[in-house]
Length: 163
Image (cartoon, rainbow, N blue to C red; front, side, top):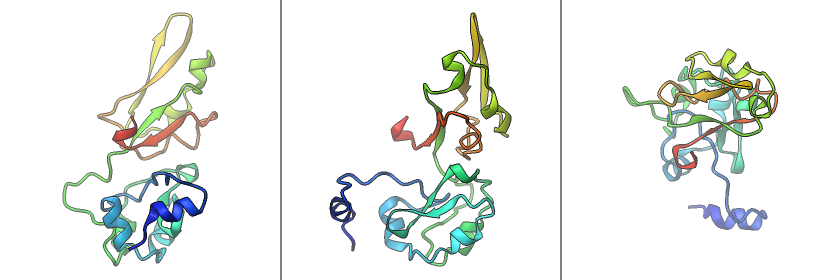
């Protein structure tokens, strides 16, 4: 078994960053143990958001697009590092809008809301300024459709522990 903290230390990164794994990934330690880094999931992803991350393990890059939760990556995963149980949500990631958001700077922008299919982003009116975006965590799927079009890169998709 690979000691990832030791490997990260020698790469000059004492604390490995948390990677966003593909939808329906097993818990991190189980995922790392099972994933063979065959890149089959990368090749099959129709939106090309899966890339080789740290150590060659697949990770999600929302700068390339959004996750449609099609399940193609799960279907091609032979070692079953990705496993979709019935009625299991893809993941618990949700979008967060940071302070770099243009409406927080007084500039009108609703781009993220235009790209959000589940309509999880709504804009609350405020006196004397542009409407501010608010994310409904019940509607947000964490698909990342709002990330790439944001002109200030103010939106991140994070796991529950980082919210």
